Image (cartoon, rainbow, N blue to C red; front, side, top):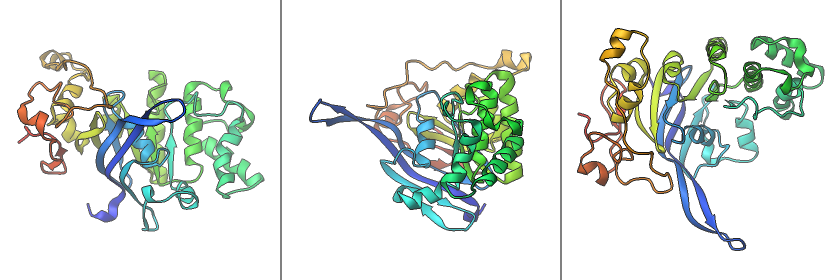
Length: 332
Protein backbone atom coordinates (compact mmCIF):
# COMPACT_ATOMS: atom_id res chain seq x y z
CA UNK A 1 0.00 0.00 0.00
CA UNK A 2 1.19 3.49 -0.77
CA UNK A 3 1.28 6.34 1.71
CA UNK A 4 -1.82 7.75 -0.02
CA UNK A 5 -3.78 5.10 1.83
CA UNK A 6 -2.64 6.15 5.31
CA UNK A 7 -5.29 8.14 7.16
CA UNK A 8 -3.54 8.35 10.53
CA UNK A 9 0.16 8.15 11.38
CA UNK A 10 1.12 7.91 15.07
CA UNK A 11 4.80 8.61 15.72
CA UNK A 12 6.53 7.96 19.06
CA UNK A 13 3.42 9.05 21.00
CA UNK A 14 3.80 9.52 24.76
CA UNK A 15 1.32 10.42 27.47
CA UNK A 16 2.66 10.75 31.02
CA UNK A 17 0.33 11.76 33.83
CA UNK A 18 2.15 13.77 36.55
CA UNK A 19 2.15 12.62 40.18
CA UNK A 20 2.20 15.61 42.53
CA UNK A 21 2.79 16.10 46.26
CA UNK A 22 2.05 19.00 48.59
CA UNK A 23 -1.01 21.04 49.49
CA UNK A 24 0.02 24.62 48.73
CA UNK A 25 3.12 24.18 46.56
CA UNK A 26 2.37 21.23 44.29
CA UNK A 27 5.53 19.64 43.01
CA UNK A 28 5.88 16.81 40.57
CA UNK A 29 7.47 13.73 42.15
CA UNK A 30 6.99 11.31 39.29
CA UNK A 31 4.69 10.35 36.44
CA UNK A 32 2.49 7.50 35.27
CA UNK A 33 3.88 6.48 31.86
CA UNK A 34 0.50 5.38 30.46
CA UNK A 35 1.63 5.58 26.81
CA UNK A 36 5.37 5.51 26.24
CA UNK A 37 6.61 5.68 22.67
CA UNK A 38 3.83 4.19 20.51
CA UNK A 39 4.07 4.23 16.68
CA UNK A 40 1.68 2.81 14.08
CA UNK A 41 -0.31 3.69 10.94
CA UNK A 42 -4.02 3.32 10.29
CA UNK A 43 -4.99 2.85 6.64
CA UNK A 44 -8.15 4.24 5.07
CA UNK A 45 -11.18 2.00 5.38
CA UNK A 46 -9.53 -0.56 7.66
CA UNK A 47 -10.15 -1.58 11.25
CA UNK A 48 -6.98 -1.69 13.35
CA UNK A 49 -7.52 -3.72 16.53
CA UNK A 50 -5.61 -2.64 19.65
CA UNK A 51 -5.45 -5.37 22.30
CA UNK A 52 -3.79 -5.95 25.65
CA UNK A 53 -4.45 -6.44 29.36
CA UNK A 54 -6.48 -3.93 31.36
CA UNK A 55 -4.33 -0.94 32.33
CA UNK A 56 -1.80 -1.31 29.50
CA UNK A 57 -2.68 2.11 27.99
CA UNK A 58 -5.07 1.19 25.16
CA UNK A 59 -7.83 3.70 26.03
CA UNK A 60 -5.29 6.42 26.82
CA UNK A 61 -3.74 5.86 23.37
CA UNK A 62 -7.14 6.36 21.71
CA UNK A 63 -7.94 9.47 23.73
CA UNK A 64 -4.48 10.97 23.14
CA UNK A 65 -4.80 10.41 19.37
CA UNK A 66 -8.03 12.46 19.44
CA UNK A 67 -6.40 15.03 21.75
CA UNK A 68 -8.88 14.42 24.57
CA UNK A 69 -5.61 14.04 26.48
CA UNK A 70 -2.85 16.34 25.22
CA UNK A 71 0.23 14.33 24.26
CA UNK A 72 3.38 14.62 26.38
CA UNK A 73 5.52 13.99 23.28
CA UNK A 74 5.28 12.56 19.78
CA UNK A 75 3.11 13.32 16.76
CA UNK A 76 -0.27 12.29 15.33
CA UNK A 77 -0.58 13.05 11.62
CA UNK A 78 -4.11 12.98 10.19
CA UNK A 79 -4.62 13.08 6.40
CA UNK A 80 -8.29 13.76 5.62
CA UNK A 81 -10.26 13.29 2.41
CA UNK A 82 -8.99 16.72 1.28
CA UNK A 83 -5.42 15.28 1.36
CA UNK A 84 -4.34 17.94 3.86
CA UNK A 85 -2.04 16.44 6.53
CA UNK A 86 -2.39 17.97 10.00
CA UNK A 87 -0.30 17.22 13.10
CA UNK A 88 -3.02 17.02 15.76
CA UNK A 89 -0.50 17.45 18.59
CA UNK A 90 0.54 20.86 17.20
CA UNK A 91 -2.91 22.47 17.03
CA UNK A 92 -5.45 23.58 19.62
CA UNK A 93 -8.37 25.96 19.97
CA UNK A 94 -10.40 26.65 16.81
CA UNK A 95 -8.24 24.61 14.34
CA UNK A 96 -8.56 21.54 16.61
CA UNK A 97 -12.31 22.10 17.02
CA UNK A 98 -12.70 22.05 13.22
CA UNK A 99 -10.72 18.79 13.01
CA UNK A 100 -13.10 17.17 15.50
CA UNK A 101 -15.69 16.87 12.72
CA UNK A 102 -13.44 14.30 11.06
CA UNK A 103 -12.67 12.23 14.19
CA UNK A 104 -15.11 10.85 16.73
CA UNK A 105 -15.18 8.37 19.59
CA UNK A 106 -17.55 5.67 20.82
CA UNK A 107 -17.01 5.35 24.56
CA UNK A 108 -16.77 2.17 26.60
CA UNK A 109 -19.58 2.80 29.08
CA UNK A 110 -22.94 3.69 27.51
CA UNK A 111 -24.25 4.52 31.00
CA UNK A 112 -21.61 7.15 31.78
CA UNK A 113 -21.08 8.68 28.33
CA UNK A 114 -24.65 9.95 27.84
CA UNK A 115 -25.89 12.98 29.79
CA UNK A 116 -28.88 11.74 31.89
CA UNK A 117 -30.47 15.22 31.82
CA UNK A 118 -30.58 15.47 28.04
CA UNK A 119 -33.02 13.78 25.70
CA UNK A 120 -31.72 11.47 23.00
CA UNK A 121 -32.57 14.12 20.41
CA UNK A 122 -30.46 16.72 22.25
CA UNK A 123 -27.55 14.28 22.73
CA UNK A 124 -27.32 13.32 19.04
CA UNK A 125 -28.19 16.81 17.79
CA UNK A 126 -25.65 18.66 19.95
CA UNK A 127 -22.65 18.09 17.59
CA UNK A 128 -24.73 19.38 14.65
CA UNK A 129 -25.49 22.62 16.49
CA UNK A 130 -21.97 23.11 17.88
CA UNK A 131 -20.41 22.77 14.42
CA UNK A 132 -23.14 24.79 12.66
CA UNK A 133 -24.08 21.87 10.44
CA UNK A 134 -27.84 22.19 10.97
CA UNK A 135 -30.38 24.40 12.71
CA UNK A 136 -33.97 24.09 13.97
CA UNK A 137 -36.06 21.57 12.08
CA UNK A 138 -33.05 20.22 10.15
CA UNK A 139 -31.50 19.00 13.42
CA UNK A 140 -34.58 16.95 14.31
CA UNK A 141 -34.75 15.43 10.83
CA UNK A 142 -31.06 14.48 10.92
CA UNK A 143 -31.41 12.99 14.43
CA UNK A 144 -34.34 10.83 13.30
CA UNK A 145 -32.34 9.71 10.27
CA UNK A 146 -29.38 8.75 12.49
CA UNK A 147 -31.61 6.79 14.89
CA UNK A 148 -33.00 4.86 11.92
CA UNK A 149 -29.45 4.15 10.65
CA UNK A 150 -28.40 2.58 14.00
CA UNK A 151 -31.57 0.51 14.26
CA UNK A 152 -33.63 2.55 16.75
CA UNK A 153 -37.13 3.97 16.47
CA UNK A 154 -36.82 7.54 15.09
CA UNK A 155 -39.71 8.61 17.33
CA UNK A 156 -37.56 8.06 20.46
CA UNK A 157 -36.01 11.54 20.25
CA UNK A 158 -37.83 12.86 23.36
CA UNK A 159 -36.82 9.96 25.60
CA UNK A 160 -34.01 10.05 28.16
CA UNK A 161 -31.04 7.64 28.35
CA UNK A 162 -32.38 5.82 31.45
CA UNK A 163 -35.36 4.63 29.39
CA UNK A 164 -33.11 2.49 27.18
CA UNK A 165 -31.24 -0.80 27.64
CA UNK A 166 -27.43 -0.96 27.55
CA UNK A 167 -27.34 -2.08 23.91
CA UNK A 168 -29.74 0.69 22.87
CA UNK A 169 -27.65 3.29 24.71
CA UNK A 170 -24.55 2.15 22.89
CA UNK A 171 -26.45 2.55 19.59
CA UNK A 172 -27.26 6.13 20.68
CA UNK A 173 -23.53 6.64 21.27
CA UNK A 174 -22.84 5.30 17.77
CA UNK A 175 -25.47 7.68 16.31
CA UNK A 176 -23.83 10.63 18.09
CA UNK A 177 -20.42 9.63 16.69
CA UNK A 178 -21.87 9.45 13.16
CA UNK A 179 -23.69 12.81 13.36
CA UNK A 180 -20.88 14.85 11.75
CA UNK A 181 -20.02 12.20 9.13
CA UNK A 182 -16.48 11.57 10.42
CA UNK A 183 -13.75 9.71 8.57
CA UNK A 184 -12.15 8.12 11.64
CA UNK A 185 -13.76 6.65 14.78
CA UNK A 186 -12.01 5.39 17.91
CA UNK A 187 -14.11 2.54 19.33
CA UNK A 188 -13.00 2.33 22.97
CA UNK A 189 -14.13 -1.14 24.08
CA UNK A 190 -17.64 -0.40 22.78
CA UNK A 191 -19.01 -3.85 23.65
CA UNK A 192 -17.29 -4.73 26.95
CA UNK A 193 -20.13 -3.31 29.10
CA UNK A 194 -22.85 -5.16 27.13
CA UNK A 195 -24.43 -8.61 27.43
CA UNK A 196 -22.83 -11.26 25.24
CA UNK A 197 -26.10 -11.62 23.27
CA UNK A 198 -25.99 -7.89 22.40
CA UNK A 199 -22.26 -7.67 21.61
CA UNK A 200 -22.54 -9.37 18.21
CA UNK A 201 -25.39 -7.03 17.19
CA UNK A 202 -23.32 -3.93 17.96
CA UNK A 203 -20.23 -5.31 16.18
CA UNK A 204 -22.33 -6.20 13.11
CA UNK A 205 -23.78 -2.68 13.18
CA UNK A 206 -20.26 -1.18 13.24
CA UNK A 207 -19.24 -3.35 10.27
CA UNK A 208 -22.34 -2.35 8.27
CA UNK A 209 -21.72 1.35 9.01
CA UNK A 210 -18.07 1.02 7.97
CA UNK A 211 -19.11 -0.37 4.61
CA UNK A 212 -21.92 2.16 4.16
CA UNK A 213 -19.94 5.31 5.08
CA UNK A 214 -16.36 4.20 4.30
CA UNK A 215 -15.30 4.61 7.93
CA UNK A 216 -11.89 3.85 9.45
CA UNK A 217 -11.82 2.36 12.97
CA UNK A 218 -9.31 2.01 15.77
CA UNK A 219 -11.02 -0.81 17.68
CA UNK A 220 -9.78 -1.07 21.27
CA UNK A 221 -10.67 -4.29 23.10
CA UNK A 222 -9.43 -7.11 25.29
CA UNK A 223 -11.76 -9.73 23.79
CA UNK A 224 -9.38 -11.36 21.31
CA UNK A 225 -12.04 -13.45 19.55
CA UNK A 226 -14.12 -10.33 18.82
CA UNK A 227 -11.03 -8.46 17.59
CA UNK A 228 -10.31 -11.33 15.21
CA UNK A 229 -13.84 -11.02 13.85
CA UNK A 230 -13.81 -7.26 13.16
CA UNK A 231 -10.16 -6.24 12.57
CA UNK A 232 -8.04 -6.31 9.43
CA UNK A 233 -4.80 -5.73 11.37
CA UNK A 234 -4.04 -6.12 15.09
CA UNK A 235 -1.59 -4.34 17.40
CA UNK A 236 -0.68 -5.90 20.75
CA UNK A 237 0.09 -3.50 23.60
CA UNK A 238 1.90 -4.14 26.89
CA UNK A 239 2.60 -1.57 29.60
CA UNK A 240 2.42 1.53 27.39
CA UNK A 241 4.27 0.09 24.38
CA UNK A 242 3.24 -1.86 21.27
CA UNK A 243 5.09 -5.19 21.12
CA UNK A 244 3.64 -6.68 17.91
CA UNK A 245 1.64 -5.53 14.87
CA UNK A 246 0.53 -7.55 11.88
CA UNK A 247 -2.41 -8.62 9.75
CA UNK A 248 -5.14 -10.40 11.69
CA UNK A 249 -4.61 -13.89 10.29
CA UNK A 250 -0.82 -13.67 10.53
CA UNK A 251 -0.97 -12.67 14.20
CA UNK A 252 -3.43 -15.39 15.20
CA UNK A 253 -1.68 -18.13 13.20
CA UNK A 254 1.92 -17.09 13.87
CA UNK A 255 2.36 -14.84 16.95
CA UNK A 256 6.06 -13.99 17.35
CA UNK A 257 6.23 -12.05 20.62
CA UNK A 258 6.07 -14.15 23.84
CA UNK A 259 3.37 -11.85 25.23
CA UNK A 260 1.19 -12.27 22.11
CA UNK A 261 1.66 -16.04 22.37
CA UNK A 262 0.53 -15.99 26.01
CA UNK A 263 -2.52 -13.82 25.22
CA UNK A 264 -3.64 -16.02 22.33
CA UNK A 265 -3.16 -19.23 24.31
CA UNK A 266 -5.95 -18.00 26.60
CA UNK A 267 -8.51 -17.75 23.79
CA UNK A 268 -10.78 -20.83 23.84
CA UNK A 269 -11.08 -22.87 20.63
CA UNK A 270 -14.49 -24.44 19.83
CA UNK A 271 -12.92 -27.70 18.59
CA UNK A 272 -12.40 -29.97 21.68
CA UNK A 273 -9.72 -32.06 19.91
CA UNK A 274 -7.62 -28.97 19.10
CA UNK A 275 -8.30 -27.44 22.52
CA UNK A 276 -6.98 -30.56 24.27
CA UNK A 277 -3.66 -30.43 22.39
CA UNK A 278 -3.07 -26.70 22.96
CA UNK A 279 -0.55 -25.59 25.55
CA UNK A 280 -1.73 -22.84 27.87
CA UNK A 281 0.98 -20.26 28.68
CA UNK A 282 0.60 -18.97 32.24
CA UNK A 283 2.54 -15.74 32.86
CA UNK A 284 4.23 -15.45 36.23
CA UNK A 285 3.98 -12.34 38.43
CA UNK A 286 1.95 -9.17 38.02
CA UNK A 287 2.12 -6.36 35.47
CA UNK A 288 4.78 -3.87 36.69
CA UNK A 289 3.77 -0.35 37.66
CA UNK A 290 3.67 2.21 34.80
CA UNK A 291 5.14 4.70 37.33
CA UNK A 292 8.43 2.80 37.27
CA UNK A 293 8.43 0.44 34.25
CA UNK A 294 11.22 -2.14 33.87
CA UNK A 295 14.37 -1.23 31.96
CA UNK A 296 15.01 -2.70 28.52
CA UNK A 297 12.07 -4.76 27.26
CA UNK A 298 8.98 -3.98 29.34
CA UNK A 299 7.97 -7.64 29.30
CA UNK A 300 11.24 -9.18 30.51
CA UNK A 301 10.09 -9.50 34.17
CA UNK A 302 7.35 -11.97 33.12
CA UNK A 303 8.81 -13.42 29.92
CA UNK A 304 9.43 -17.21 30.00
CA UNK A 305 12.39 -16.94 27.56
CA UNK A 306 14.01 -13.67 28.76
CA UNK A 307 17.82 -13.32 28.59
CA UNK A 308 20.23 -10.73 30.02
CA UNK A 309 20.00 -8.46 26.95
CA UNK A 310 16.22 -8.12 27.53
CA UNK A 311 16.71 -6.24 30.80
CA UNK A 312 19.51 -4.03 29.43
CA UNK A 313 18.36 -2.78 26.01
CA UNK A 314 14.95 -1.77 24.71
CA UNK A 315 14.26 -3.97 21.65
CA UNK A 316 14.06 -2.39 18.21
CA UNK A 317 10.75 -2.21 16.32
CA UNK A 318 11.54 -4.59 13.42
CA UNK A 319 9.67 -5.63 10.27
CA UNK A 320 9.88 -9.42 10.05
CA UNK A 321 8.45 -9.37 6.52
CA UNK A 322 4.99 -8.94 5.08
CA UNK A 323 4.16 -6.06 7.42
CA UNK A 324 4.63 -8.21 10.55
CA UNK A 325 6.34 -5.95 13.10
CA UNK A 326 7.67 -7.07 16.47
CA UNK A 327 9.73 -5.61 19.33
CA UNK A 328 11.70 -8.58 20.69
CA UNK A 329 15.44 -9.34 20.81
CA UNK A 330 14.92 -13.11 20.56
CA UNK A 331 12.68 -13.31 17.48
CA UNK A 332 14.72 -14.28 14.41
